[in-house]
Image (cartoon, rainbow, N blue to C red):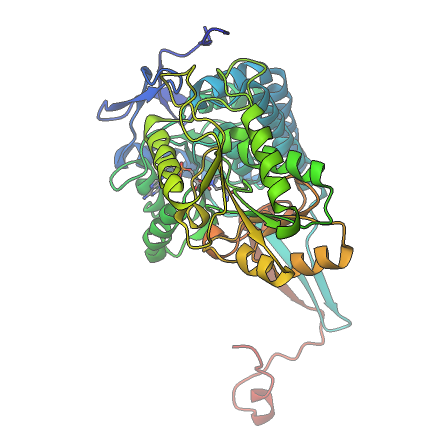
Length: 509
Ligand code: NAD
């Protein structure tokens, strides 16, 4: 068996990055970060609190109000973003090795995430120079145009699954539009974020535009302090639906702009007329890639009754062949789950599943890994819609399969959870595919496809899966104010008091 790989260029400890400088917490507090293969602490990270967040927000606010970034020509900001993308590409291997070591993701998939992170910067670098704004004309009377402006300090709060890529997804548009940022990376996986300061400095991003505060999310800690800071008008959050609700409440008194990318329990619906082999391959990848720690995972598979037995048999056999291994091994398809707490949570669902449904593959720790957060790809069949493993987000390599008889029942089952992030539909019937896509409660739908995303399309969920959409121009909208400017071309009559007929001119409140 391959040996557990530990990158030889790990930093000695992780610090905040505030106003262009690496700094410890003001109170000196730190927390341990664990290696998911051994569960031993391998590094200490600075634990941010109210005062550290205040310092980071002050630096970001100063860079916004007094620095060059917000007022730079889009082309000039775009150049910096392209340079960031170039550096991320060049350092992709190093980055993926940090990510793989810290998160337990398979190295091949971490390399893909690094490529995607570079692409996120490149995409928004291009979009911002192509950005145009609306203008409206009332001939002879009035011209109106939209003046788009960066908003200020954006607070970015990210989860531990694919951390570097998800950070880039927020950093790209927030920076492209001229905002300054404070990033709060997830406490389980802060390592790859330690590469941002060097990347941004090399690319020429002015000091103070980008800041990091490490630490926990709860009250009194970094995440909560960022949400409650009055000088942070925007919060872009990705994480659990429950955390999203708390942040929503805490941001309410400040009336902040919020973007919420939350949890999922997405259905993959396989009709009898589908290309079965393609559907099995894709639904295996769809739930077991990224260790199953994937918001858009197709973790409920609904299968038409006439092919159900064959599907379950072939699917379970294929799940047993998915290779669990050390994250850094090129052959590994499922690595180690991120943290012992999360491992225990996923294992508890495996035990719940055994009481609720029929286990057809996996169901525990692989014998060759007595330690670390390794779980066999696990398949449950005959899962009833009221089962907890059908309703609740497990966020691990565990899938629930349920049969259906009619299109109506498939739709009812697909919509029968509180979530609504993604849906995958497998059928060769065009009419059925499009009708199902119309009716399914999901922010994103893929027909006969895995989760392959065009960066221009909206990204987001409905119901408990999110609030608002990012992606393409929607991200630009989120990170900018749109001011309407109205110009009188000479023929707009300005009403005056005292003239009865002028009162009728006042038509907008
Ligand atoms: P989490 O909600 O526990 O934590 C996410 C982040 O929020 C962390 O940085 C955490 O420190 C911070 N946080 C926690 N409490 C906070 C508070 N009160 N105030 C401010 N910040 C706080 O989520 P997680 O366990 O890190 O990530 C997994 C979840 O993320 C899953 O539910 C998954 O579906 C979801 N997710 C969604 C998407 C999407 O785009 N919809 C993408 C990836 C992950």
